[in-house]
Image 1 (cartoon, rainbow, N blue to C red):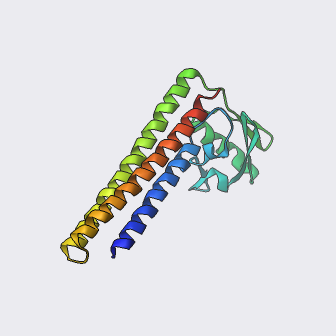
Image 2: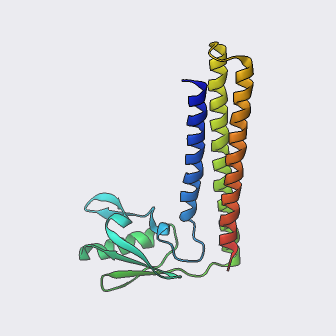
Image 3: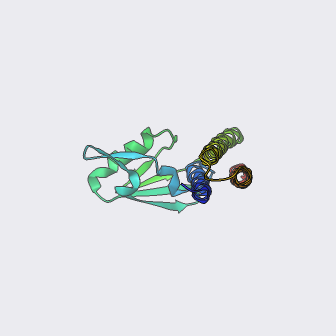
Length: 186
């Protein structure tokens, strides 16, 4: 692997880490309805655990209500039970073949807890980015040891990797700040 490939691969992996963080944040409740809230829920679909969005239409009824409409009538009770049994603390109500999920308003205490969770996710993402930096620097050191690049090139590349790391850590901080602001907005 060349030095340029190491840099490109590291930058790609750091970008994926930030995107994963954003994806994780969609599952954190902010007081308004979001279909991403139900993404992790699995439903027993004929003996096979299946994501809820593959057995039902998930939508936003209004700012504080989600609607779930299973494609098969016999799945209504199964989907309702899966939502109730999830760790989200939701209480679905069925009317006909549509399941309505009212989202209660967040208390100040719960908002602070969610803020701490967001910071924890952010810190995990920063650790992942720093681990990618360490791995890339290790690869650069091996290239120098194998005499494929000079010591000057090694130092320059390590500086480039540090700049990449700083950029992605700053982006993670920005994403965390945005999510905290979203959570704390009443």
